[in-house]
Length: 456
Ligand SMILES: *[C@@H]1O[C@H](CO)[C@@H](O)[C@H](O)[C@H]1NC(C)=O
Ligand SMILES: *[C@@H]1O[C@H](CO)[C@@H](O)[C@H](O)[C@H]1NC(C)=O
View 1 (cartoon, rainbow, N blue to C red):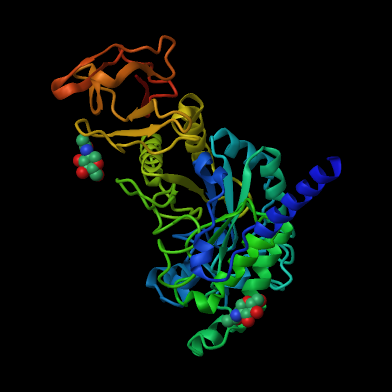
View 2 (view 1 turned 180 degrees about the vertical axis):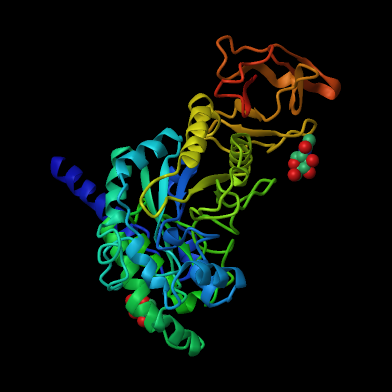
């Protein structure tokens, strides 16, 4: 009896191992992998654009491209005015000093923002790696500039703060001679991919075990050139993060919103209707740039109200939000970024149950009153959350057309001492929810008022 039970158990284990899914290097197989659950639960991430472009900190992260490839007169004039005639882009790297870089302090701010994951540019289109890459000799943060493994130090700090850590990685590099050679050969050769991209990707996966690979810079060449499905099959089958890693959809020309993991779609992707496929809205606190820029004005920053409005709309439509911050070349997060992040965190501190672990509801926004976005509790279909963006000054109540009065058991306003609200039947069976007299303007909930609606 004992023997046979043991044998049976062994048999079962063998079946399980044999039955473990192995992904094949084709899109059908790669796309069949379920998205690891943590991603949909966590909802809020921080995006960091940091690199040599943070030294110039003028206009955007595409400075080198705009200066030398687009030959943008504004960039040329800027260089002529401020730098000696033979100044090269590489000369900026020495000034990437990061002397104030305290990863634990960054991690504390990200934690306080309510974000659950952090995604850092390990390598942007300029090709400079923020980790000591063996395939980026003298063009990495250990050899030039900070003389430090910026990626590894942040990974440690972020994980110590109990956040997940992910890496952005640009496939293409504007000026890499191997890339330019493959491009000139119309992608019939791929030395850049075999000698640079693939080894680099394996380095970051093996060394930092990222929870996200945020791929970018794919659009000039087909996925067959990038050998994307081969990399993804390795990532999902054999890499140290095979069970936890999530990826996006930027793996080759024309693949956005078609293949890969979740859809990152276009930048600042803010749909207003339900998306069937899980997506992420990568957006910026400085509305006009991904990198820190010195000429930025206060009015360029998204207001806390608009930030929360974007957050609730994104989550209602089945998205995560990835909130971008541009650190400075010397390793600081400027106070205005920190302020926005802490505001988001204080709102999430009160209203997080409407966001984390939530699922899209039957309706995304209300059918009568504008600027109301719904989610439902991930564990119970009976609990629905309505994030009301505007306090009903004039009427004192909001009309919820999407919520039938006859189905409602109770309504609460999260964050109030006495959260229970009165509700009555409105026109055509709608629910009219009576708001209490105004909340204090200092209150963390003033950017969106979350109604927790329990259905019968
Ligand atoms: C893709 O990668 C695999 C594994 O490194 C390699 O065997 C294959 O030749 C590559 N394909 C192309 C087109 O480079
Ligand atoms: C709900 O959203 C849809 C899509 O944006 C829009 O057409 C509709 O007007 C919105 N409803 C209200 C009441 O604002």
